[in-house]
Length: 254
Length: 186
Image (cartoon, rainbow over all chains, first blue to last red; front, side, top):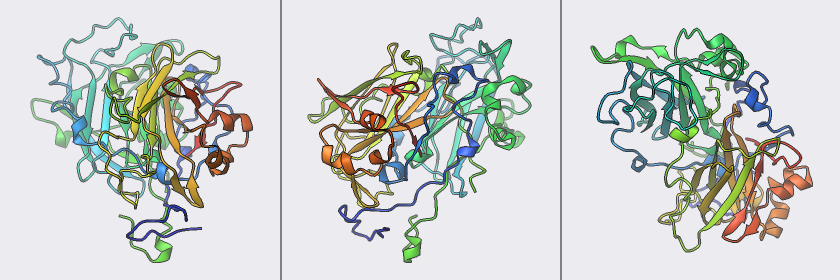
């Protein structure tokens, strides 16, 4: 069944087996979570069909630096003047669960301003918009999988999910990895936030240890003196299953 | 060793400030001669449109190849072809991706039918869901495609095949309900 690939590539008529990515469903929140009301009409009720990983699933867009503007990774310099709020540096490393860095992958973020309001037509939270803050950033990881943003500390904000509901301060993150299967959208939180206990998005993650992986670490060593506080947040994407090529005595696919 | 991955969280209601790109819907450059639109609407379980969603597509090129280091055959140089499409849903839940038709992609036991992988993100979804788009003119290939034929419900299977439309194809996505789209565990 396994067709090893030689330097000339496989014969499409013969077929091709490729190493897939480790499934990690138990880490993620369920699609149906009653504490987060909006899931009620937005989760499939029928069982998912298992999709073996093939070429479409183990590849993904190779997005280049041409997607990035010069100031996309510094949300404090995208306007004529400085945004309100505490400047922070957010940095970390993107790895897979085999421990390998994920280099040259696009990292996108979006967030509320210091008062907890998004620059979005639907956000009616009566906190002023900041004319100098859009709340959108992009960068690529370097050869070691490292990323770095300069931004401002986002505020908490109320929402209508339940009585007296407040979202803990967070930054939305979007990552591609190097495979369709590695695509991840998540949120980074801040240490010691007193709002976690009542937040359904936080609580939807079944394993408390997995929740903690969404919390950045305050990083005194990387603060910028008289300028910015710093947080370090590493992100771990799915790792590879062992390659079927190895059994054939082939070289590693790296 | 899956215990260390970072959990998914919802894109939330304000994804449209951060994720869409101006050229996002163009998996191939605007005006490409063989380009066509795949248009659809994203629906929730009550049949209401989902205006705060995002659709992403990923596919092979017309030769069935991927511009990616893990495709051992290498890519065919095709300027303007990105293979990746990204479109936010509008106030009517509608999305559209302008692309080229993918070629057959090698599978474990011979070629797979031409297909496009799709991710769906939205407020109210703690994790994305994934489906595939197939093509109506590919009767023979669809009939033996290992993924399409693994969808047990014939009606759901049929719904993964796009319908012909004036400027390309039509592919609606139902997150829940009688017409619930077949989603895949990847």
